[in-house]
Length: 213
Length: 402
Image (cartoon, rainbow over all chains, first blue to last red):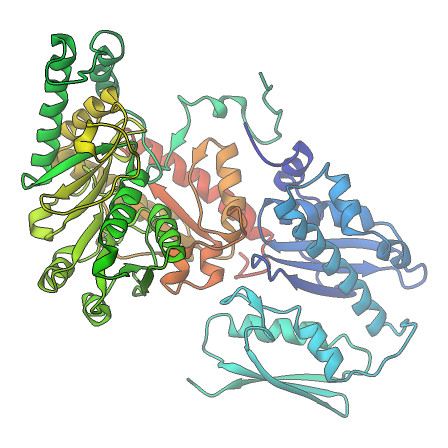
């Protein structure tokens, strides 16, 4: 068969390593691709003493290379310390897979970003942050830019799903432009809570929908 | 020769085209063996062409054969009041109709009306004309893909010279109300081009009822050969040729015509009848019924009443390219409107124009039934698809699990 993918990519796509979910993970993170609408979610189990990634799993709403890159990237960081894992780049993943068609390279970026964000979340929630930067609107915005509205295939800031957001005494409130009944409303709410609640100084995340439109 | 990949999970025999389940008939179909048989003598024995009315009898005899086919196809579309120009296919016919008409008639006005879900050969022809100074209005479509005839009426201007619209859409099967639109266009005295490439043979129509001035046809979507199509032009409509040559095709398309192709085109139409259309429509409905029975969270894209061979669905929580590749490895050929599948990472412009959310375009699948599709193949394809969807949904972060 003719395929634009290497045999290794096809092999990881058909038999993905570390696919699935970890119940009660030590950290998790989701990333969405503004390029095509793909999504990947990563779960971590970390040894608190050695800071070694003891288990990692991923879920994917994406194409063959999305699944294959997540499979390879999780395989590469498993058993590594958080510091070692942070050094793995998307290029390393692409190389390990024997290359990707240029149009699919962003899938590797997505997978690696999700792992890095999960590690960052672990550092936030386990008090091992090197630099404790207080959460401000800038930090919130940066995190929200990684939440994709599936109906638009773009991030919630760019597409205007988020109307406004604020932080006061550790409580983040995000105001949305969509009513709770809209498709994927609860998914977007969960994603927002998931991305903001790990921040070290955030005590609570409130997501407020607009009234029915 | 490239060797076959030893792909885990894929069986070797699935590369065999005999056991392959081909469900991409909206893109192209297998040339019917009866069509091919009819064509063969025109390569080896009946290969001559006449260069003038005083030519040798060998060429004249074949010219007569071609003219018989021309008349047959004209009759097939109720097009006695016009000329049929054979082309290399639907793409050339669309180019010839739109560029040919615009470049001949620009002095009467430079505005063209079309829609946002036209075939790429129409879209790109219009982009070219825009660069040449023409103005194009791309009408929106409803969530089911319909152009509103009132929209056509409202957008006609003083300088509108041409309305070009597709009859049926190969991606979502929607059939436009061409008769109603034709009436509006004719009242205003504007030329009307209909791209009926996907309808050729599948949906009987009359160019007279449509009040069309130009109609695009193609052979390969209805079990005819690739590389053959035609543009029907109403008498009195003037266009400029794209390919200059001599007298061939009324001086509107230079070069010796694809004679075996034309023979095959006519034969393919001759083989289509209501029984055949009904049988294909039955299989399409059967496929949709089976899909709904076996796969949850699945929805139809496009209207219920549609092209008899076409089906387009969205399977939620999975991505189309992943589905297409896994199905391919299991020996089933289909396609998707997902961004991940396209060369430019763009979701299908047809689905987007219909307002289908990105997320639903992501999981869209397009099926095309053909004359050679069997009920058994559909059962088999549905069961393989079910397996693929279950596998992908298990690792999807969206939707409910178990």
